[in-house]
Length: 303
Length: 303
Image (cartoon, rainbow over all chains, first blue to last red; front, top):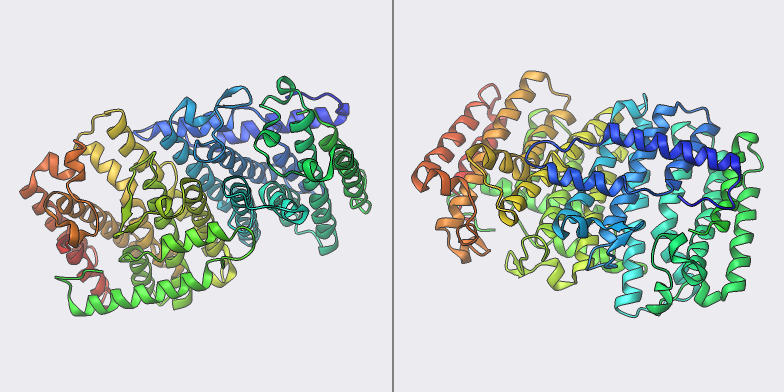
């Protein structure tokens, strides 16, 4: 993880979250045994390839606001990371973005093969639901059902998968997108899982409606700021720092926030969204400080 | 649906289940609206392509044994069919079985494109969990969590996906399978979802342990009998009747129950399993009659 421009307190918390979430995933994921070992090796390869674990971090931090037990929060965080990882594995496939590298390592279909990558993604998605439904995630089964329903909505046809569909249509079938279209694309493709990360704490902690709405608003603004920052990294970024190819969107002639707004307005917009996100946290005490720092980090990061 | 050799009572019940499950799916599936409409069109294309709906039928019939409400059973039946359908969509992909036709119609990646097929499968899997977790599936959230956990186990790395992995390893990497290997392959690839279909009624109806174990044993035998019959259809079947290419296993040099046991012993084995399956239903009254007829149908069908 490259963590320039990150506050030391946030850096420590992000690093601790990475370690905690990876330990939890290692414990929860199936072991590569029996005749079907290969697909489990691929699941583990995909999920332990690194990453900032930002979505799990949101679960852990929002859970903390409501005094949720760490074990509960970590299980939901692990499930969310499994879904994010499955989406990357499928997104990297030759029929989708056709990427050979992710975080400097061969993508799953390059390291294994395409069929194994399809299956490993399928199994990671399925695994997430198995983890959430388990009684160790929360003593109250109603809370577990609410989590299953919310993460399914965020991931499905009117969530992340829908966002990927819009993205593909725009690229492959030249379906033109205006600013509203790009916004919907991104709210589904990356925003929905980020929003679930922020929603999860409130579900686990049975938070009151006003607190949930504040976090929803925070998630909305952080999610969009995150995507605009991603688009800026693609235009201005350094491939070595970003750990992935840059300049891809422009090469593909893709409409992005930056291509529509221009670099300066996009940067202003991201900055404004980060400030707005922090304002939504006003009625939380200093337990929300890391979420405040995260809003700044999301727009200032270089990778 | 081609239903020769099927008892009139079973035929009526199967046809009613098809209609009821399809109506439920049409009601529950998202509508093809908004920018992401294409993936929803593909989900609907895949799921309304026909099919015997045997797995949903098992849910409906086992639920009936315990007086479960029809709405509950139909929702779980629809979710199970969504998972079965997603597995077919991904299995048909060029990197997997590379099939152009299913039930005489273009497969999803031929009708749409590969990326849309990957996404439609992903969305169908996700949809299944959203449906089960919803409170309309059962008033008791513990029951809903048990269903989510059970269907996830049946579908995941040590379930259906694991079975597909073993199948691919055997085909692509010439991992040799003996009778035990073939049995594990089939118990995971097709047996696990069939077993869930039989388990679902007991979970919904909070059935006592002995009844659940009887149904589990029934599912085990019916599942294997179903697969042996499939292998026999592939060797002896008529492509027009079967609605799919036959002779594929032999052409691929695949080890199957028939290649290992021979046609006669395979047929005897299927017959024996069907009888054994029926014997497991002995402590149920005549409400289990359709499940008894189904055991015979599974081994006598031509498609």
